[in-house]
Length: 136
Image 1 (cartoon, helix red, strand yellow):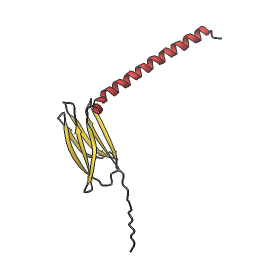
Image 2 (cartoon, one colour; image 1 turned 135 degrees about the vertical axis):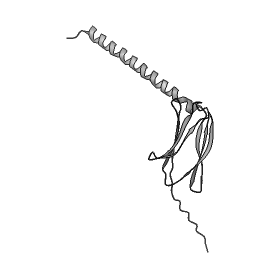
Image 3 (cartoon, helix red, strand yellow; image 1 turned 45 degrees about the horizontal axis):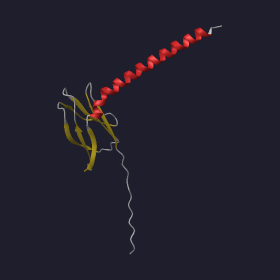
Image 4 (spheres, helix red, strand yellow; image 1 turned 60 degrees about the vertical axis):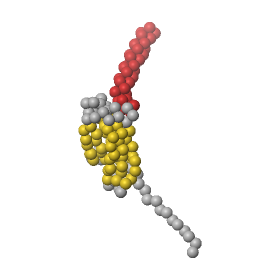
């Protein structure tokens, strides 16, 4: 039969190990969040503006980009690259017109080693029936 002292000692060791492992994983998670926080806090924005002649119009207003440059890629729901461009400036403003072509999702990625900004847009369409009844 095990003594109470040895059971208590094993339980204490396991508790200490668990606490150390949890604090390590939280520290790692905070470092990863801090690494990519710059993208969301930079004031950068990607937004849908309007529909224009079967073209989806998106506006990119990117600020505080890394001076070493970033890569912009626009992909569809299947991962097909619709557009790709290297950005070498710290700010970037442009409107993109993308042909609708039955797209259901568009993803914008602006990234390099230390910067990551992703915006995904779901595209839903529906037909609306309007009925007008007038007395003759």
